[in-house]
Image (tube, rainbow, N blue to C red; front, side, top):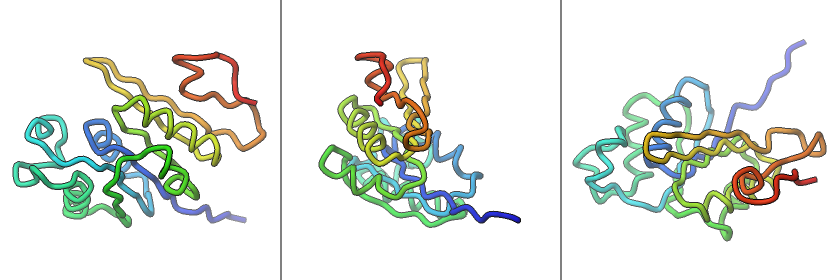
Amino acid sequence: MSVDLPAPDVLVIGIGAIGHAFLRALHDQDADSITLVDGDTVNAHNLSRQPLFSISDIGTLKVDAARTALLGAGWPGKIQIQPVFADRHNLAAMVEGRSLVADCTDDAHAKRAIDQACLETGTPLISAAVHADQAQVILLHACQAGAGAQFRRHDLFIGDPRPVA
């Protein structure tokens, strides 16, 4: 007997350099639907490390330019966009019902809010960060609810090292 699992519905928050790397890796993973979230526009200094963008995209919302580039490259699934910055006021609605959230932001406050929203909804979170020539990627909240201790990003890097019960 086979079980049909739902196709992944991935929320990608932050369409900068980390978001570009994540989208490249996600391309062959059969995501049925992705939603790109970023309130920023493409700037000239983005072009060297954000390959989905070109000179003609300068001044365009990153989510619009990324969707156009991904569709042009034959992205296999549905692409939705939300041209907003993620914060504690809008994250719960964005995260609810997703199979995975990718935190590709470069803002500590956003990372904390994304982590909290994923913890509260039981949504697996891939969180990445880059500093100079170092990178960090962690997977959080991948356990079934009640299946064990859950750590928040804050617990691992800043605060109390005890897991959330």
